[in-house]
Image (tube, rainbow, N blue to C red; front, side):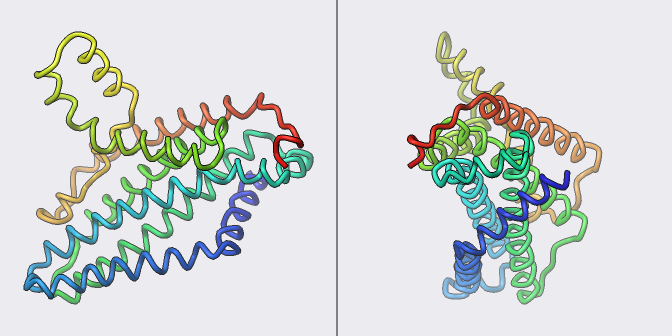
Length: 262
């Protein structure tokens, strides 16, 4: 566990060295300007618009951060040749995979926490507030969803370079966000092989829609029963473990060539 934590800390330090923290600040500024610009359209007194827009940005930016950070970690180590010193310490490949995932996931969660805090502050300036219970549920579910995204991106990066892994991760998770919730409606319009393909997507891809509490946060502002929430959290943890296992299986027997990395 100590080596996993150390690798995660290195991911944080690398983010600071690459000035990714400034990207987070820019994203926060973009969200703030978007929320404050609602006044321009005469909607400043309607806190629901502020919540809706802010939460949309939060999901979008959290998704982007989770994919970009987790998909580049292993390919960067291989390209620079530092993977040799890591594995010679000795660090097991499973520890390397888990450490990279933990670092990327914790960064995305920390940034997402800042986004939620910003939204709550701006909503407070509008004279409204989030109920503590529903805000906690929304953040926990969002954090677990980011864990799945990071695990998927990391799994893809074990067999691809950083750019390809990011592209496929954005496509795969984007399809899961957009297409999977619509599959039940699409099934009544198609049949045969297309229906089978849709059912395959519905079974294989993660159901991110289960983790999205934006509607409740915006329109109901009341906590959901904890029983179903815990079931969704368990599902998210299960899917995260599955994709981390795939990442480890994809990395455990990978052959490294110094010539190919140079």
